[in-house]
Amino acid sequence: MNFRTINKDLIITFLLVAISGMIFFFVSNQRAFLNFFYIPVLFGAYYFGKRYATQAAALSAIMIFLIAYFYPQTFDFRETSDLYKWLDIVTWGGFLIITGYCMGILYEIKEEKTNEVNRTYRGIIEMLSVIIDTADKHTQSHSYRVSVISEMMASHLGCSEREIENIRIGALLHDIGKLGISAATLNKIGKLSADERSEMNNHPKIGTNVLGSSSSRVIDLLPIILHHHERYDGSGINGLSGNDIPIGARIVAVADVYEALTADRPYRKALTPSEARKNIIDNSGTHFDPDIVKIFDVIYPSLLREGPLFPSATLGASIVGNRN
Image (tube, rainbow, N blue to C red):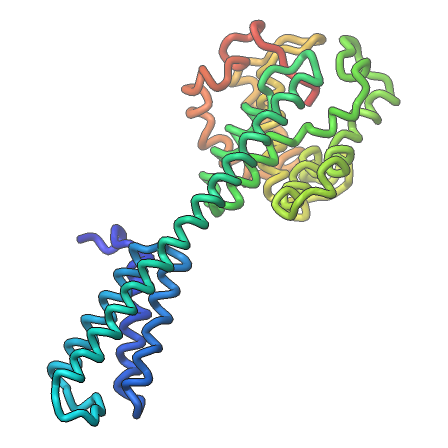
């Protein structure tokens, strides 16, 4: 079997049992130390569920049975009959396995409830992104498409699962501040005045104010929402530059601009995907993080194959985009 295919969780559980077994030989009161084997069992139950908890308990029981059989002197039993020794070990092993199984079931019940909450959370976020896009009559699924592109880049960049999920959701909500922008400004066909541009540029800050009092899970998204209009050279809205800009915001910035460029606007036609790609590359190091641009270029062929997800890039006039 290839080592890379071995379940790492099972290895961790096995190592904990093995460590307990090795320590077992170096303590004077082995019978009392038997309770130490509850640690890997509870660890397996808490982190991995009943399967690994039961496996840890079974491995521990088998190990003690073998030790008791081949090295009987390691156990100090005052009773003369072996019956008492094996009865004691079987009782201990039975309780250990039952404990692991029951704790594992409790873990899985907790996980199911947590997953249900997460599904509800994601559903609310998805519905909220739709509401955000309907605030601007020139927007159709912009936030969704930005989230898909952002998730692809974050995945190729090697971000953790939690970081990828935060970036995906941050992209879905990146324009939530537009709910606080006047409809006249959002839906204006002509060029924006200085005051209107200032109002539009304020939407990231409005978005963070809207979500600022939310739970810690949502607070993790605020840097993405607040800084997705920063520029790598420091000429953006808040003046952050380089790596001072949160990685999620740097990713969403590229996805946001690409999606906006490939969508029709009231004052211009959509660029072709290749033209939009060139724009992204030309602004590498000034507007965008060069490393993120390289990742974008890697996933670019995938964007061309995702026609149903990105209708604005392939159908041109049939879909219109929002103000970036």
